[in-house]
Picture 1 (cartoon, helix red, strand yellow):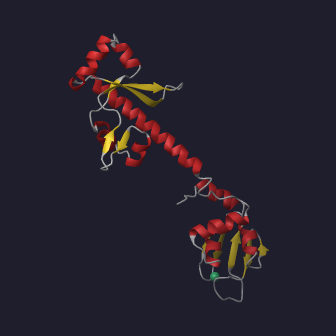
Picture 2: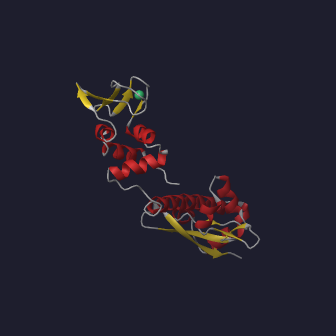
Picture 3: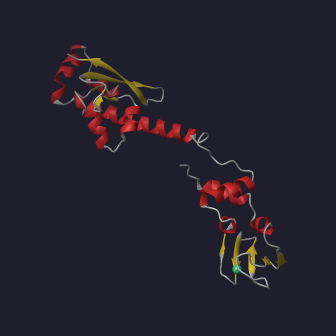
Length: 221
Ligand SMILES: [Zn+2]
C-alpha cells in the first residue's frame, strides 16, 4: 500500500487551480474576489455556487456542499480517495509514486533497521562479555592480552549460546523478518529462531563512520 505524503498532496493541489478545475464542469462568472455559477450538485436556476481563488475553496449557499479541489473532484467524478489523487496528479502532470519507484523508501527503511539491530546486538554482546557466563571468553581475552581499554574501544563481546540474542531483540520490539535480514539470527528447519553466532567472542566490524555493519565471531572452546 502506497502512502501519499502531505507534501505530494500540496504539490498536486498547486498544479490544479480550483477555478481552472471547476471551470471544466461549471460556467463561472467573476464577481469581486469570487466566482459564481450554477451548482453542479443540486438543481437551481440562479447561481449560489461560489469558488474562491484565494482560498482555493468552493461553497454552495444552496446545498451547503463545500471543500477543496480534492473534495470537488471526488464528488463530481464519484471517485475514491486514491482515484481522486490519480485523477488530479494526471491532470497536473505529476508522477505518483508507484511500487517500483517506492523501492528507495523500502531500502532506506531496511538500512535504518539493520543499523539499529546491529547497534543493539553490539551492546548486547559487549555487556555479556563481563558476565560470569562468559568465563571462557574472558580467559581467552586475558590470554591474548586484550586489555579493558581495547575491549571497550572495539566493543568486543560474547555471543549467546542458543537464542539469547534473538530473545533480546524480540524484547526490544524488533520484527522477525528484520532480525532475520541481518543474518544474526537464522531459522532452523523446525522453524525455530537460533542465533547464528553461538559461544563466540564477537568483534563488530566498524565502517568508516564507526557504525557497526557486521560481525566476526571467534569460536571459543
Ligand atoms: Zn448546491
